Length: 206
Image (cartoon, rainbow, N blue to C red; front, side, top):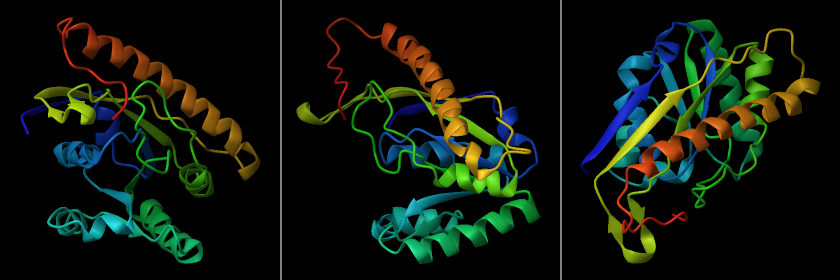
């Protein structure tokens, strides 16, 4: 696809510990970014919707790479699966990667509201939240059927501890993470978009 993936502050992901990794979700390409840094993060498992398992060969590749598929239409079963995954995370010092927006965000100018699932898991297990921010996919323009070569920056932010927090603190935790990721995304947007020529066919909506 002629994409250049650049990981920043990768040492944060490399540290051996249980953690919940949260990142913005712009496109199915997000998963390719994860695969590109899988060796850095070491023990890591991503959470994805069950429907993606049936998109072959991607689904099989993701399954073999350790992706956990959950059924969004069966909340009880999804919750059980996440509970098991959470136990493995704390016992084996594994990181769980979740997209807290819950669905692909087609607006490249701002994030969707974060759902609380990832943060509930982090607080319940008393493990830190590690934000990872993807720069905007400026090289995709669905309206003009354009997919150019591009540069994607994946920036790891400082871990946010949950030690001592309770479920009552989750809304504040979500807001804190959201604000830090939003600020980082704005800076990354300026960086990658400033180098584009004036006539570049960039669309803020994917």
